[in-house]
Structures are given as C-alpha cells and as structure tokens.
Image 1 (cartoon, rainbow, N blue to C red):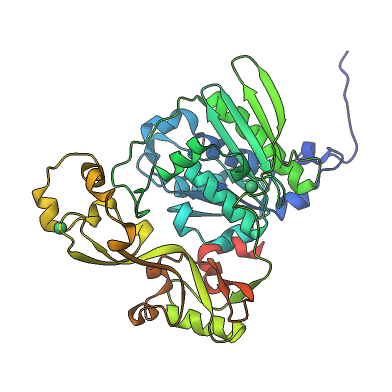
Image 2: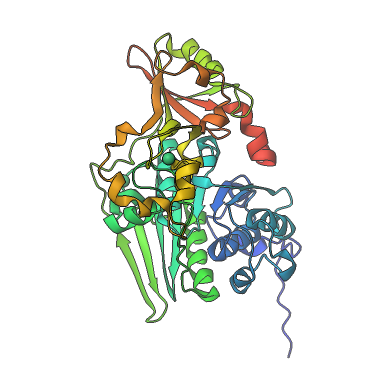
Length: 422
Ligand SMILES: [Zn+2]
Ligand SMILES: [Zn+2]
C-alpha cells in the first residue's frame, strides 16, 4: 500500500521551507543580516557556503591571498581554473551564484585586514565570522569588533580538532585569554624594534582536512544564526571539538579585568571625507569644527618620517606608514650592498648592533599628534598615504579632554558596494 502524505500550504519551491519550520526561525532576520567573513580558505569556504544556503542577505568577504592547487581539496567554492585568482573575488563570484536569497548582496575586499580594512566596515555588520589561521588577524578582529560593539565568532582548526569561540559586545574577549606565545606569534611578522614588516616570513602550514573545516564551520555558523535570532548563543564560551576522540567540550572563558582590548567608541561622528580624496589638513578642519581648536588626533598607527641606517647612521627619509615598510628598507643602499646577502632578515644579521642603540636615536615617527606638533609637509598628504584606510574611524581629543570618534563616511559606498542598501 502506498501512503500519500499531503500537507496544506507547503511551498515546495521555497528553498527555506524546512528551516522556516523551526519555531523561532525568522527568515527575514537572515535576509536583513550583514555578515563579514574574514578568511576565504578552508573554513571560510565552508562558512560562506553555509551562509549562502541559509539565505543570509549580506555577505562581505575578506582575504589577501590567491588560490593555489593545495587549497582545492578543502574549498568547495573554487575550481581548478581558479588557481592564481584572488580568493576573495573568486569566493564572492561563487557565492553570488550559490546564494538562495534572491536579494542577497555579496561584496569583497582583497587586501590586508589588519591595516587596510576600515573600522566603519565592522560597524555596519551584525556579526563578524573569523576563519583565519593566525593570531595577528584574530587579535585585530577582536580589537576592531570590540571598538565598535559588534559580536564576532572565531573558528580555528588543527588536524581533526577545532574550536569555535563566541564573543559579544561586552564581557570576555579573545585577548583576555591570549597566551604570551600567541602574542609572540602575532608579533613575529614584524621587526621587534620599529614594528615594520619582515620581508621574509616563515609561514607555518597547518595540518588539516576538509571534514574538520566543515564540522567547525557548521558550529560557527550555527552560533551566528542563534546570535542574530537571540536564541541562546554561547557568548563568552569556547566549543572545543576533538575529532579523533569525539570529545566535545563547552568551556566558559574568563574575562580579564585589565584587558587592553576592552572599551568601545561611545559616539561616532560621520564625516563626509574619504581616505583617498582628503588630506590630513581637511580632517583636522572637520574635527576642529566638532571639538574646537587644540585637538589631538590619534592615527592608531605609526607614520615613519625618517630613520637612520643602522650601519652608517645615514638618514633615510621614508615618509610612509610603518606597516608599509619592510625591514630591509631600514638599511641604506650602500650598506646593503656591502653586507653579506642571505635569505634571513637583514635585522637578524645586525642584531648585536641594534640591541645597543636606543630606539629614539634612529627613528622619527608620529602616531598621536596635535596640529602644532605635526610637520607641515604631512598636512597636505592624503589620509591613505598616512596609512588610514577607507571608511576608517579615528579618535581625537579636544582641548577640554572631550573624546570623540570620527568616521570617513564618504568611503562607505566604495567599500561596501551593494551592502549599503541592506
Ligand atoms: Zn578582553
Ligand atoms: Zn648605511
């Protein structure tokens, strides 16, 4: 005998028909959500696939890397013909194709999320999902999300194990529980004295497999769904999974009172300024309109005016943000030609020498300054040339100690594209 089960009012053409049956589910909440996915590798691919199938309406994909053949066993969104393409661009293209929400908007940023992704991007997200493999990016995400009061969910994998950590606007954050080894790992990409970049990095490749990224990403996205629905997300907790033993732990993370990452911008003033179009002078004028004369501006990053060659003391006028300078540029051309060439960082070669020199004697830089202190030639520089990314938020203090944050809001369409309409 054949039973014919028939239910009234079932729209079998609706891709979200089954998930709508979950009691608290609100497809409209998903459709109106904006989520940033940092890292479009193994985890990022899975996370993006999940979000696209669930019907999330706004996805912003961030990655700096390009696709190689070794990625393909863990990246459902990439094909062999994608090798060499930017991960963020290829993922965005595949996700636009896959997204089941007809009004879904997908945008991407190919670049360095630590320095070149403005805080205004974070501010416009409902939740940020981190799918990276390094602590420098995780710590930067943590600070950024915290400063603008946006929750974020970290996912990490190693072998058959992995974990997911959920951080809210307040309470415990990623940095509260970070170990000295993790801090050291994050700093290892920079020269220890000047915080300029190391040219040669020994990137550690994680042992992992697609099943682990699929498993951990599923937990990460499940928490994101619970979070935007306010359905008992595991905020302040770490979900630890051991795939080998099938161990599954839910660990409560402990906040650190003196954690440096806590605190957020109270009020953010939107300015009709752009990082690529406007100068430091124009930013000062706009801030002075709000806070009066005598403001101190915090770039939140170091701009290096000049540096002395560590061998001969010759002045090298760099005039660039520290994060756009490599360690081998701290030595003049003639000394560089005379030193033994090998693949190690030049600073490692002269470690004995640099350790004896006082930091201040060979670097001239600015990061926090008033109009009076800033060299005149900097006032005419475009904000981008000072190291400020589009749609960034900068903080300033007035003469009366009033603190305020200012956003370069004129960049919002350029950075966020179609996401602006959600
Ligand atoms: Zn903290
Ligand atoms: Zn020299």
